[in-house]
Amino acid sequence: MLLKKTLQINGISLEMERKRVRNLRLYVSPKDLQAHLTLPFYASEKHALEFVNSKMEWLKKTLEKIKANPPVLQKLREISKEEIEELKRIISNLLPQWEFRLGVQAKSWKIRKMKSQWGNCKTKTGEITFSAGLIKKPLRCIEYVVAHELAHLLIANHSAKFYAVIAKHFPYWKEIRKELNK
Ligand SMILES: [Zn+2]
Image 1 (tube, helix red, strand yellow):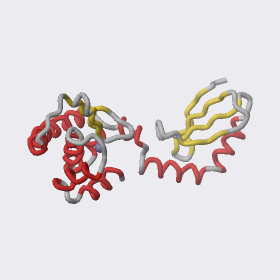
Image 2: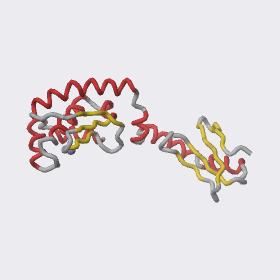
Image 3: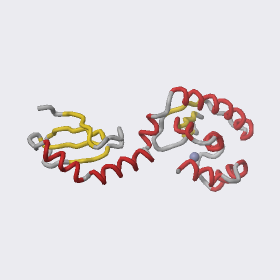
Image 4: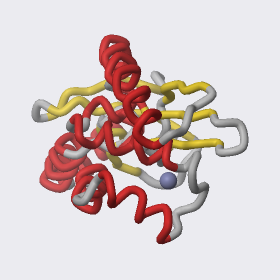
């Protein structure tokens, strides 16, 4: 008995896996954007396929939805080396300009695949990290994040004082932030 196999049903590829479970479970994994079915070791395959067919409409809708708007992890995985190189070039260009305008200097900076932040500034050491995901955003968003992280070298927190500095340079920063978070 195969514990794992891939089936094609109505044009959908389904990863079927037998496990120590009590019930059939059909789900779409946010990791590989694939349909998965887990079933008990001795469940009949015919019964399992009937179960999948009865959920077909739900399954198609769920797959469509998740593919139209893949979760953060998936989006990060899709970023190529070339895109990261491009982001590196863009930031290398912007950083000195904004260091000059704000009168600060970053000690070092790097790009990482960060899940929940666009940028991070360690104010004590002057190290700045930018999220690789920025390459998928418009240039004004990248520029905003560069300036935002550098501005933390002036003011570490997100106080009104901090945003006064930001607003001086980016009168429409709230719109930019909206664009970043959508
Ligand atoms: Zn911040």
